[in-house]
Amino acid sequence: MATYSSIAYGNIGALTNASGEVLLSSQTASSSATIDFTSSITSTYKIYKFRFINIHGEEDRKNFLINFRDGSSNFDATKTTAFFQASHKEDDSEAQMSYNTSGDLAQSTAGANLDRFVGNDADQHISGELLLYDPSSTTFVKHFMARSVGIEGNNAAQDAFLSGYCNVTAAIDGVQFTFSSGDIDSGTINMYGIK
Figure 1 (cartoon, rainbow, N blue to C red):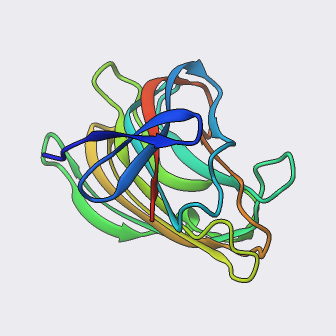
Figure 2: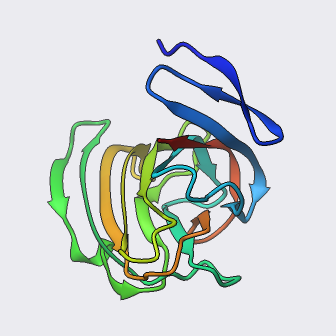
């Protein structure tokens, strides 16, 4: 179990734990079209971690997506990604591990898949983590990777993996979470800085 202690961060109180993570922001969805983080992504930290917890969508079998802002007002940074998943249906009728090119992006401004086909039954949701590396660099592309667990609309447990990079040299100054269709009904996303 992590031990938390209060520290000062600018004008806000923050938490740090034994692994050096500093809680910078927390947002809770309530029928939200998107959850956007548009402040505190600076050169202060080399790594930013986002934990998404019990994210429940309005619509059935929709993809949970991540996108990035690179200095403009839009979340449309150019990305190249790889996505694969393992899944197992609760009735044991199917189990698979697959790489599907339709889950990838190649030099695209579209949202990247954190998980696909997430169900919207009362007990279906997605949880996981995303790491964003050195977003303030104006020299290198910005790498990111994520792992999530969720329940698909066909009642399969899914373990999903995403990796990729924003192919821009401009600083990344915003991160957006959304579903491919419908609102984020509920759930919490926390943003941490790591030195």
